[in-house]
Length: 154
Image (cartoon, rainbow, N blue to C red):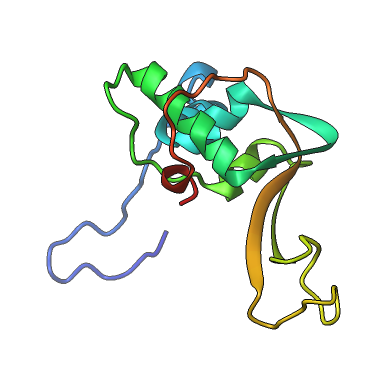
């Protein structure tokens, strides 16, 4: 503690006592509940934790995964119409580290990876993007009725 001349009538020495004995109980800590909070706040993550599993070599398209997410949300929240929620691929990857999201340019003529001379009808503009998850499978297949693929491809 500093010892100096008190000319203004202030306290010369100050002693601070802080009680450090109290701790946050485990059931109230935020660290233990962060995954539970993420599941409730982030629909893509919550869907992945309960409905998506790792399976070596399996593939599922992004549009099919989104279709199942929307039906899952409709059932979970009791909605009359399908919600306009976007699927977040990074949240699916976060939920399961071995599942990977892939965007690949494919040739519209042959369906293979779009590379120069991939087929006889090759053109640089004749390509499309294929978006899918590898090593992923759905645990519960939800029957989707009256669905338009153009709505789910977003």
